[in-house]
Image (cartoon, rainbow, N blue to C red; front, side, top):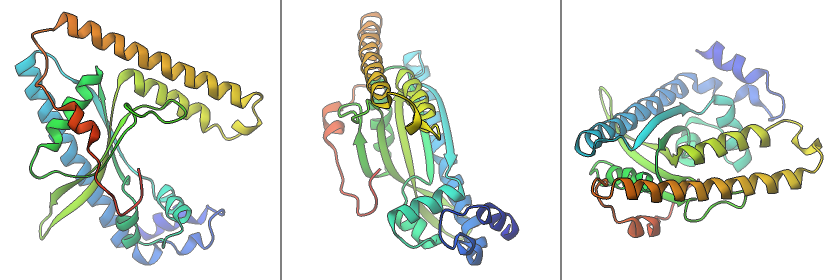
Length: 249
């Protein structure tokens, strides 16, 4: 494992002293990544159980699919370096909230808040931070509900609360975000002619997609007026914010 970690980091030259990061904590780093991976499994299980239950009681699945990932070691180092904090196993836990990430793709806008509400009502879930980019989209048009959640994971000799970032969005929101990511993270994007115009076009596309989401929601409400998912207090959830001592989402 130490050789693999060294190989991962030694090829990187844009971060000072990259060779020294985690090399002396190779086992601890591997163990921490395992813990984040287990936290993802716990979170996925909770979401899958909710989806199965709702499919029985309401004859449809609000969750279309779930994806997940553990942040790559190099990305972890780069983010810690960007924050100006120490690069160590302890610093990863203290300063990063998105090492473990779960993305939930729903059919309709109200499904997003229903799934979030049902998840947050579980007594072993602790909400650390919420960012509602559906109610308050980013300037570039990005929309999604972001939750930083702590979930207990039981190991052979301890129970450890692990943080997981859960992003919940519709199929349409996910389509836009994926395409935007591919285009914006093109290495030579700054060399593309009329970048500002292209960014404006992407923002227009995001607004059109959001309007389509709202229209699809209205159509669904007409088709299934008596078969809605359990009512959630959306206004309360949308207004809920909890201060976070660590980094923002």
